[in-house]
Length: 48
Length: 374
Length: 181
Image (cartoon, rainbow over all chains, first blue to last red):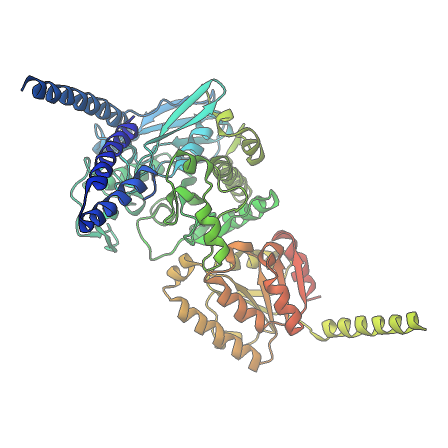
């Protein structure tokens, strides 16, 4: 259960960042968001 | 305005609910799973009965006794020194739930470092538990941490000075029971648990003691029997016996100058003959990929296959089958049986005769669950 | 005619192969040592005892330990616990083994390689010891699992060193004993 809740929170935050990423116009901010997303998505896939 | 408040309230309720569920789930790490010892069980005490100093702490743990009533030797089987090593705990549980003793006595401690079962290792992304299908349903087992829960022992010193050797190790190892032997009565919790175990070995006049472990496929000490130099023949006899049964174990001598480990200190400070066994567990390795229950139980990981193919390191990993839990548990139980057989040859006046444990092939064929009660 | 020639050639080959084996005599007393400090050497010690060999085991044998011995059996295989116990580095151990081998060669003491650790004592840090001892041996006795990739057999072929492969550790006792009969 703990894992599912953790995953739900992470999935939600990832979703929000993806929305912001798509809205973002400046490439510098896009790059920063992509980096953050990379970590989140790896974690969602249970890869360290 | 109202709409705004409404959304705040809904979000608060959802968050609080999730928080409560998560807290309950987290709290379950403190509830030990029920074990179902076999019919041969004759007694159950707590480790604190051997040393008061751990009474009422999370370090106290159950000690199960199988006494045949026939005069003979005494064995001690310990699992769960490092609760992140699934096969360590599970092998001991299979022994506990199947064993019968016809000569001598056997003590079993399935959760050697009970405190370490109540948390998991930070930053490792380990699952908190795993389930094993049995004859009548599934059983859930916790996957804990390598070391004592920081809630029970904190803070760690910068440098851990091992007692009594004064060997210097990193601070984290302060909470590692397998660096804390022989322990001391006025030390930190881990040292006190270690002390209690040494007291048990002394008081019960244990002749042969097992400490069951697992390690990463890439470390050099894997698929081994580590023995104390005083009891070389017993180890070598068992290794030859196991090889005849198709199981390869490498002998490793306990280094005289590496302190705090069971295979060193139990041999130096007590009259027991200590053995430590390791199997290969890919879920513990640095090269592992997706860290989930499947990796813990099936032990299959493509990264290790690739690593092995490079030939750069010795990797204890079988490319075709991986290192499934049945293989790891089967090896440990075969190791215990064969070491006791070998011990009996060298100490015929103090025999320990154990029966009813499944052999390696049986466990591989039917799975671990077949040998768990309930 | 052709068959006769090939028969003669075969007999000659067998004769030379056989005589090269016969030419290599191994005599007792035997010094058993390790290369890499794996505890496999303890198993070999036990096997030698079971074969009633006049053998002495010195884990960290040095050149001077060779005095009085007529055969040197080296058991290669890396063990971090073993090296830790001895308190030396892998480099120190390689140096020791190299000088021991050189001394044995100077004294014309034949070296027998016994590799019984299977794949647990192959590759990684073990192979530097395996290679060094194999290159200098006069006979190799290897448990098959350690030669799955043909490591020892290719050295044996290239250097014309007799090699005996056995399935299990326990089965290596007899061929070890036979070397000295």
